[in-house]
Length: 576
Ligand SMILES: CCCCCC/C=C\CCCCCCCC(=O)NCCO
Image 1 (spheres, rainbow, N blue to C red):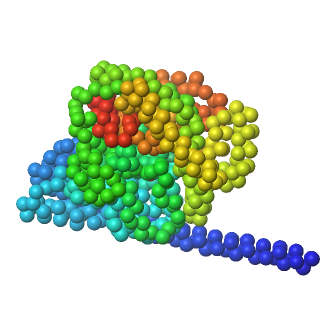
Image 2 (cartoon, protein in one colour):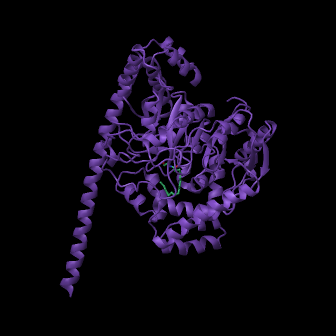
Image 3 (cartoon, rainbow, N blue to C red):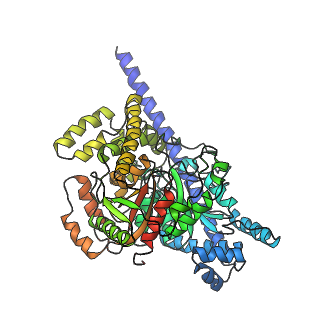
């Protein structure tokens, strides 16, 4: 018997020693890949500096001073060549990167691509509508020849072999992808950092996040390094960074832009692909909603989307919905019953309501039903398997320590999490308890939650129809741009955007104002009834001057109406 026990102990010791050695080797391998990538990035930054200097700085200033419409016109007329435009934005993006650490890699191919476009002009070919326009792309979106690591070191050096559908459409329209931008590890957070490329700063205040997961894009655009970017959004990753960085962004419903995972030519960590029912959508980000609208108008002006992805219905641009002067009935709310926003985030919704009423729109109070339960369902169906795949991908890689501590609760056995939910409830932390009940422990539960999403979608559109409401106006987030670590402690703060991923509504955000001294003072009265409110209050302090956006959302195929209302709003708010 003693020999048997001894053998078991020896076997366990050998197994753990082997595991430790395997992990040590993996860590060394991943650190080597990160070091190699940092060298490659440094070389590309040097390449960018040299490229930018090929155009006189005065000429770059002239081109850099043009807004989106002016540059498009100059490119069409030939006053500016594609090479000049791309080179100018390589220089401007370099300056933005030095301020915010927003760039992951430059796309060297963009210079050759620009030259080829200029050659097409010389040959007298007709020019596509976005001819020569430099565009920036979120790191996680496929561009041929570039990595899409999602912040995972294990995915370095697995370059895409094809363009993602949205990139393919941009190239067909004449645009030139020239740079890729930073993301948070796993994309499932609204901060913006990883062990490969570091942490991206908010250009409005150092020490604050630009948001996520399309944070690098938001920082780049807000710092003047790009006129147009493409991001992705499964819980608010276009819209929260737009709010934090003071720019505009649109997440179309999943039925209007392609999600085809055409090329996953990497063999890095498993990432659990798409999330059934809750689909990640790609969409435009820019300094103004008008630019976002122009890009989507070009995407939908022809059959481009369904040509690239036959799973998408051939729904064209709806000019009637977007018509200037069109008036809408808009439901509004300033709290979703799950996470009360901090004062400034409430105030800008009230201000937006007033501006839109002055514009002739009809604003009526509206409450989204049952948000707390639907946020539980959202987290359950987003993580799908109780967080096992997400934990596996992150733990087998080299995560920043703060990600591991944020994920630690997911390591607690689900039955223990649910038991602890009773303790949280007893303490009055009903929201924490709700989150503790969000991880799925079986396919039976998952099926039930999918069914509740379908029922909820029918319920919301029916309530909107009964109230004769076209769309909804609400906060974009619960706080202004917080410190980098805040989103990892406050995943629950994504409810204002995530609910529209669950509903698969089209939704957009534009900047309406900035956090002011009155908001700072009112913060004193913000609740501290549970750890989340206490943290949101702490993270919102000292935010005077930070941008604040609002969100507008509508059922699928009404994205044009949403953008019309956001443009009506954007045109009537004080400029930053
Ligand atoms: C890394 C920590 C993850 C913890 C579990 C997260 C569960 C719910 C939080 C959701 C937060 C969503 C933020 C936005 C995500 C997004 O839209 N990503 C874009 C993907 O294309």
